[in-house]
Amino acid sequence: MVRKPSILLLGSDSSTRTPSADLTEFGCDVRTASKVAEAAGICLFAPPDLVVVLEQKNGMVDFIEQLKVQDKILLLEYVPATVGAVNDNEGQEEGPTSIAEAVENALQELAESKVRAKHFFTKVGNKLRRIHLQDVRFIEVEGKYSAIHVGERKYNVKASLKDLLLKLPLEDFVRVSRNYVINIDRVTHIDTFQFIIKIDNDEVPISRTYKDELMKRIQLL
Image (cartoon, rainbow, N blue to C red; front, side, top):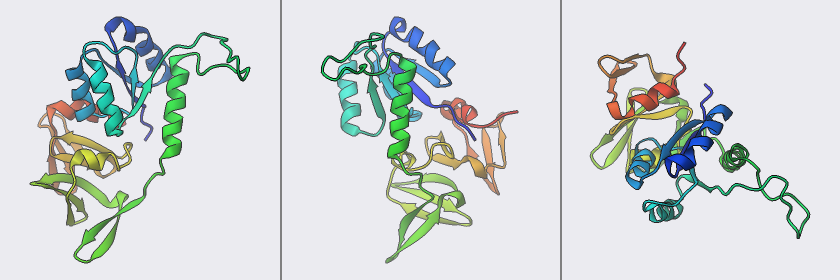
């Protein structure tokens, strides 16, 4: 399944209008935010692959600094380069000449820095058990733990869904509600009327907040 890169542009409507159109044409899934609350909501509920800073107004400075400190979402502070600009010291062109090129370079660096995991280990008693990602059906919140459902068994880990998503391949796993993350490859069917996902014999609820993101991630013919 091929997934479009998810990009969040930070800036005023006027500053994001043209870049949004350019990146959409380039093949990205683009969202924009001009206010901190809006940007924070997107980063919390549907984290993008890349946040591109075009302007730092409306209190964005502190929010951007928080993103840098957390270092969980790739951040690009984009400054348009002049076409044909030359670096006097090296005689080479300075950086990308378009936002599409800048975003492509950033995503390429992200891809090269990550090694796709095929499995992970979780502690069971005094042993570490290997769990293959393809065998994970879904993950749900259970109190202070996240329960990872593998076949008919489940493994409780002391980690939030948000933290687990940062370690899981985005093309396979998606958050569908406040308390559930699913493996798209394990879905049997989706009831868009009753907001239910069927995975084997289990029914997983879909939140209206996350429904749009889910529909963007599935391949619909």
